[in-house]
Image 1: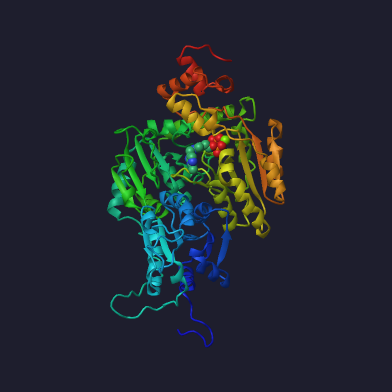
Image 2: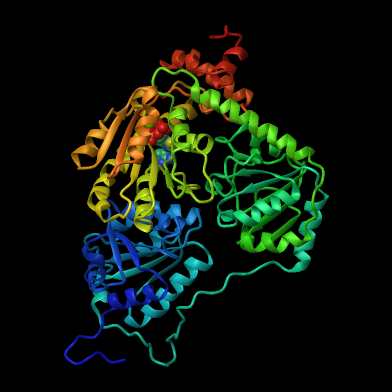
Length: 608
Ligand SMILES: Cc1ncc(C[n+]2csc(CCOP(=O)(O)OP(=O)(O)O)c2C)c(N)n1
Ligand SMILES: [Mg+2]
């Protein structure tokens, strides 16, 4: 269609946004710069586009990923300038790639006229993004826009990955070619998403059912791919009399309070999950590629079926017998008619005993007296207070462990984190994305003080700028202030057998609640055990975002569900070899801590 009289034709930037809108992309996280300038002048002219300015391009990319994870947009999008802006965005884009989220990154770039000349900020973006991008293309001619944006969106959705569109600043200003000519070398592409693969063929379902029906002790491992299949998973689990473990990103798919849900698997997992996996005879993996294979059944122990939307992800963690390619809900639903009811309740009864004894043990751990606040108690006290529709954002650190073990979620809630890249600095961008996608839902972020200092204090400025537009202003940020990069301190003790070096591990004490107050937000410093509940209540009833600065003990051991002798020995060695925290670690140890095990291994007297 030709442009109306006296108005200029659309330019490339406007065409890019038109085409993205056709794919349902209406939200843009980003940060401006001259490379991407055309997009930033086109965005405000649209009434179907929302732009969220954050403090750092990495935040924009993390938030674009989290936008999809929290069910905000079908495709996440970030728009950043070339050179330094694009480089900043890389980490968040890798988070999306590794967690299989569809994200399109719009990268500004040096003008075509200057490329190759060593211009300011000129970086070879095509090369730099070739690993993170499942699709990478530079728009050098306006006729490319339609097919490049269409293919970027299609690839992001179909392959659940990152697609990168590089936009030289001068091309963005050129006249658009919305309808490429019907001529050799041009494409007429579609903005209609492809349908999902549907259910596997009956023969494959039958083969899977034969394995599952033959088992007497069935374990299910559910990951991110199972989210959205709560009903189907419950039916299959009940039919099979199975117990269930969740990978970090699958948490909440089944109510954590369900007696057959053994909770988290892996290093940060529960003893119940450890037993489930080590004693089952049959394994059903749904949407998970959790890579710590030592937490799976031993090789040869179980027959196994795997369901994954991407067939290439099946059979890569366990020697599976049948692999079903398909979306979890559709496939489980199609599998049900083939499954026989297991009538023997013995296995379920075992599973329920394991979960009950884990609950008792973790309750004891949370109530163990510690010098400063016990972080497990702080997180545990949130469980019963967490609103039914809450969204939770979690950072990488000990917060991940307390989230996995001590917080109970259910399917109406949703928690997320940088689940495969395990990057620090994810929680605040995720929380911002959660609030932006769902301004009417309460959000809670669990963040370490190291992560808070990495980017959280800055992103509170984004919160301050936007919170008044949220229908429900509640965003509670729990900072686990332990003045330490505690997770790594524990890795140093447990895996390297060395005392952590305060020069690298200690982080400065910062008054986070005061910083929040200074910004016009609310906050409280939490130091007293008896005040934990009332501070949560206050934070969750606040009329604005609230920072809880909890002064927690850094010496709470991260006990793997199955402590190996080597880990325990290494821990003991570091404690005896001059770790200044050794005494309080041991003093803080409840019965089953690494410290206590290590002491007994070394024949040291028990600390009661
Ligand atoms: C970007 C990034 N840098 C470094 C790490 C390694 N790392 C993992 S956890 C952690 C410590 C986190 O410290 P903090 O945020 O204070 O949480 P804590 O473990 O003390 O609760 C570090 C340094 C990482 N995962 N990501
Ligand atoms: Mg810390």
